[in-house]
Length: 275
Image (cartoon, rainbow, N blue to C red):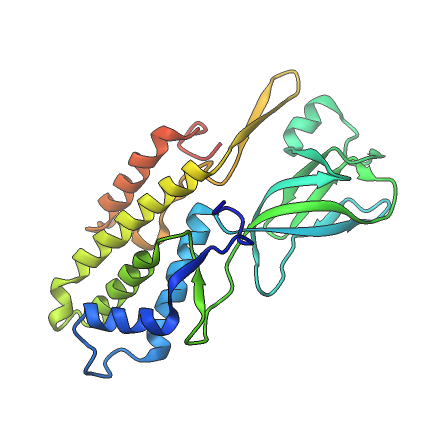
């Protein structure tokens, strides 16, 4: 299961091998134009982008409740910082994702109600809230599955955290960045090529992650409000290639094509957002 990093989701090539392949693709093996630190940064950027966009890198953490405390910080271990909570379980039973406006329709005093939690909601970008407010302090009663940023790779013999078989995506991203750096030389002819290869890889990684997932739908309330959970609920804007306000970018159409080819397969909320 590529959605569980405990099952060897590591690159085939090491950091050392990938740096060498990037220089080889750019015909720069015999020069010092691209330093080791620079190539390492680009390769780590690529694995972060893959994790951020497709949210495939999952972690599970145990958390405790405190009586009369509603809000808690998101899990932020140094090696796997939280992007978003995907699922939450209280005493091994799944609890539902909620929104404040939904609760306000059905339960006017929900902000002060206490009991056994059966729902959770996001509070800003750093915390979550349990509903009802826990009426007991219990150690490690919560099991939280969240998508995370993978650890940075720095050791030459270490391998990257990516879905199986996608070493080339890291290489193409780093070659794209190297070509941008060399844009006044031979790299000017390679910038568009490696950008297209990176975007193609990014799309195909999303399809692999989607095929490996088992999304499920939670329904609740009289209005039968729904939330699709899983690793591929929406395609976010690819911020690195958006046109500036009032301007144009030759890559903006590539971003739109990337989204248009993905979005028909998933739920969209009105206005083009996620489910």
